[in-house]
Amino acid sequence: MKLGIVGLPNVGKSTLFNAITKAGAECANYPFCTIEPNVGIVAVPDPRLEKLAEMYNPEKVTPTTIEFVDIAGLVKGASKGEGLGNKFLSHIREVDAIVHVVRCFEDSNIVHVEGSINPLRDIETINLELIFSDLETLEKRIDRTKKMLKSGDKKYHAELELLENIKANLEKGIPARTMNFSTEEQETVDQLFLLTTKPVLYAANVSEEDLQQGEDNKYVHQLKEFAAKENSEVIVVCARIEEEIAQLDDEEKKEFLRELGLSESGLDRLVKASYRLLGLISFLTAGPKEVRAWTIKKGTKAPQAAGKIHSDFEKGFIRAEIVSYDDLMECGSYNAAREKGLVRLEGKDYVMQDGDVTLFRFNV
Image (cartoon, rainbow, N blue to C red; front, side):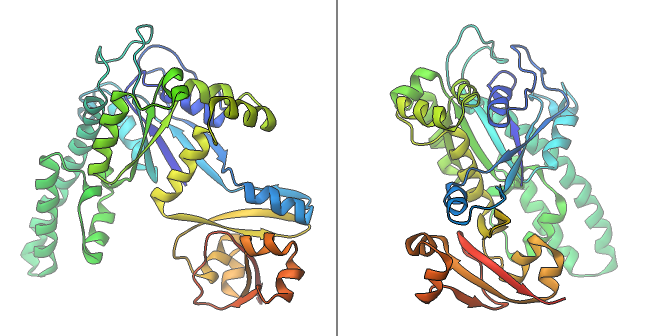
């Protein structure tokens, strides 16, 4: 899973990126500090792995990971090549989803590229650049489809109608991700690689005071109202606090969060929200050699999940032996769960569930 962190210059993008990846990306109070995208691989926090490790005492514990890409700050005119526009847009094209960092705090010491704080204006600036880029893509595809109409194939009539409908919506400022497409239409849309089809998660970057008081400021309210209209989620974070948390060990981190009155860090909430956004779940494997989490799409069947571990597992799939994590913890051991009849044998049509502790049987 690859998430692109985007936002206008000086909104706290790189500070947040540094905090969640500890990658040490350069961070400064001037636009375009980030030019080439910084990339960081982050372990997905999953307390279930710790509990399984206590039970199995494995040689190693391997969490699943997310790749975060810190993409250069954007300005108006990016779709026409202003600033680092073309690079910015090409980097967005490569990610699975967008984490849009929006500045929701006042600070005279940190210059805002537009001279004032206005989350909705900032969102519109980036959305418009993505829309302008998509319109250019669509115009080229529409010209091509019109030429193909001469072949007499009726499918091009339907395609042209779809393309012109998307274009009309984009011209009204409606991103493609909020439009409803049939399964057949979605196949065509997927081939277009439109930037506005990328799912978006908004990260409201607030001050330390706002986070500690636990009260939404007016900017966060505005952002939540906007996000609700497009069924997007808002995570409230303080990039500065996340930066402090990143320097602490696990025990210090828990104590620090308790002092702030928080149950989990911004990174934990960001990861969970990203999973929801992309429809992802984790299944688990456990044994004396390794306890490990694996990420799959919701709805994945057992053989394809086995293929995440090794292609041979999918090719020679026989069955999956599965116990739910909760049942396993309640029983205290795999053998106890088996004795209670809680270890199930599942075949090729079984749809994997989040927290399935799984042993695949295969033959190659």
